[in-house]
Image 1 (cartoon, helix red, strand yellow):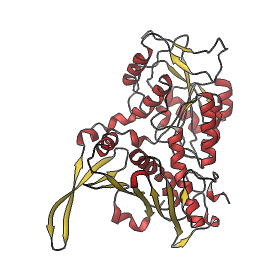
Image 2 (cartoon, one colour):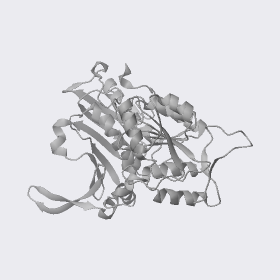
Image 3 (cartoon, one colour):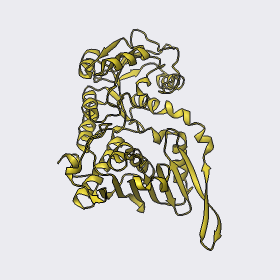
Image 4 (tube, one colour):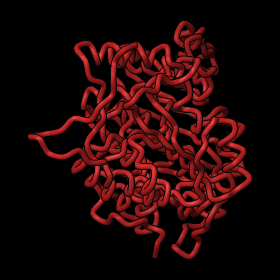
Length: 411
């Protein structure tokens, strides 16, 4: 492959860190897509022989935290086997974990402080890998201000205010930011969304979402897993219009005094019961529920889609699956129902999800478009969480976009 990597300059201006890197050459976009397709960029796939590093190459870096959120779902591996890209450094404040991960990745330079790494190594691509969302806002904003392209683990950030700052900066510098709400890019989910748009269920009327409702039921479930569900709701129904919610602690309405921190460090959370209603365009309504008492009754976490002609259930997981409700017969006690799998051919393609989100992120730079799950998409999921808390605390319906952008539990 004789495609080279260089920086674009505009009007003869000197190159800067904020200037995007692109693949040059007559067939650069096609070659780049081919490079990605066989480059095994997925974090669960086997690495290729190694990157093609010449005089000019793209510099990548990894930021994690072994003690708090680790490296997400293996996000430290996203650059493995990608020709033309070199992981030049890794940052992790914990020495043992930092050294262990660096050895596994073959990274020579490591840093305890991610700020020092950005300053000295000047990467063009960064993956922010830890599940811990508390530092996401500061790290991603620092990268966006320098025009660095970022792939960040979910939850994206803690509040709409943090998201706003990142979006403004990325708009100014051209930084492409993707959020790891990877569920939306699973083959079966993409195929199901197209089928729903094509009338599989008739007109979409309602979406009923349930969190995992395990020991994290309530506020933690809302932020850690609910953000996936809110992102999927928008994928199927568009941007929400308003939200009304009730968040409880053992049956009583929460106050700001009920806020707490959790192990994954995803900002303030509160309550062990969440009941929320969301309104979407075209008369579509949705609910989100997280209450440990309902775990056995509702089963797998995900979304039930109700249309004018049918019902389907999307079970969320690393390999999601879809089921259609089938009415088998009528009886004096009502309709007996069963569920049948839908889209098995797409479920069998689930391994593709391990590289698709990162591939899309990289291609978004050469095509100058937002990633399929962009910072704006991640921001919407966080804003829904904020709306739920604010509605619960005030007893009022919250219209989007929210006027108050701070985290509702900040007090």
